[in-house]
Length: 465
Image (cartoon, rainbow, N blue to C red; front, top):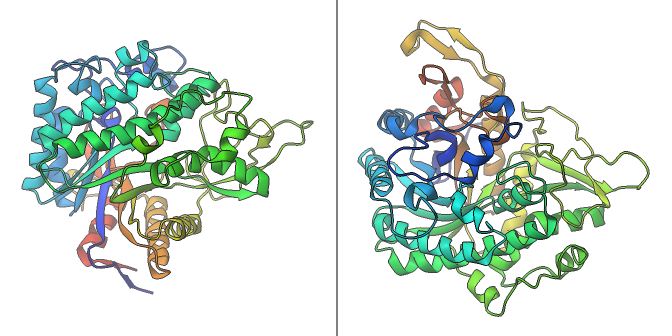
C-alpha cells in the first residue's frame, strides 16, 4: 500500500558535534568530558577518540552539498559548548561562533532548515572539574551559554533544542560510568537529573530573552518503551521517562520516583522556585526511539539480567531500582543488539499524544547500526556503493509506524533519520555505523548508501511504498 506523507511533514537527518566535527584542539576549542573520557585507556572501544571523527568542521560545505543532493528539508546539529566557551564560562570564542554562523548560513543558502541542539553531551571539562551536572552552577552556566547562542544565531535557527537525551547524560554519565565523565555515583546521577531539567528551563528563558526570530523551542528525550510486569514498568518508566517529562511539561517530579529513590538521595537539591523555572512552554517535543525494553521484578536469587540496551559498565544506570531486571527480547536485532519493533514507536507516539494532546511531536532520532559492506558499482559516482537493505527496511518500517500514529490522531510534524554520517558512536568508538552516508575513516570519503538514496526518493515523491 502506498501512503502519502502529511502536508508539511519534515524529513531531515541529524548529527552531534563530538561525533562528527573533529578539530578537537583547533580555533580555541576547549576540552570536553568526551575528550577526557575517550583519551582514558579502557573507556572506548579500540581506544578511539573524536579528535578527527568525520572532520565535519573542515568539510561542512561538502556535507551541506550532500544534504542538498539528498533533498533534506532540515538538518539537526548540535553546538559544541567548549567550542563556544572553552571553559564553560566567560566570553564567547569568536572562532567557534563563526563556525556555526557559516554552518547555519550554508544550510539556509541550500534551503535546509537549521535545527540547533545546545547540548549533546560534550560538557566543557572545566565545568566537570567543578562538579559537572550534579552541581547546580552548571545549570546557570548552561543558561549563559544559551544566551550567547540565541543572540548570535537567533535570527536564523528554525528550531532550538535545549538538551538531547538527558537520561544518557545523567545516568550513563554519573550512575553507570558507561559514558563521560564515567562516574558511578547514584546520588550524583539524580542530582544531575534535576540540574539538567533546571538547565533546560533556564536555557529556554535565556533563549527567549535573546532570540530575534520566531523559532520553535524544544527538548529531545530518549523514551524507554517498556514491556513487562506492572510494578517494574512503573518504576523504570519513572526513572527513564516521567522524571523528565513531568517537571518539564507538568511542573513537578513524580512522587513515586522520589519514594523509590529515597534510599539513594533525599532530593534536597530541589529548591523553592525550581519547579516553575523548569516548567517552561515548548512548541514541539523531540522523540528519540530505537527499540523497546523488557523489565520484570528480580527474584533476588538467580543472576540478575541487565539487557537494557545500554553499554555494559561497572555499575547500574538505574538508581534505586535494584529489584528490577532487564531480560533479553526476541529479535531481529541491529548491530547494537537492540530489538527491532516499529510498533513500539506507534505506541509511544500515541501515548504521548494522549498525555499531552496539544503538544506537537517530532521524531528527532531514529535509525539503526548494521555491518555495512562497500562493493564496486560502476553506476555510482566514485564506483562504490553500500547496499544496506536492512537499514532501508528499518527506516521504511519506522516511517510507516509514524504514519500509523498520525492516522490514529497523533500530531507528528516530521522525522529525522539518525544519522547523516557514520561517526564516533560514543563508547563503541568507530565500531558501529548508523549513517545513511558511509564514511571511510582512513580517507574520510563519503559514500551515500542505498538508505540515503531511498530517503532522498521518499523526500522527492512524498510517498511511502
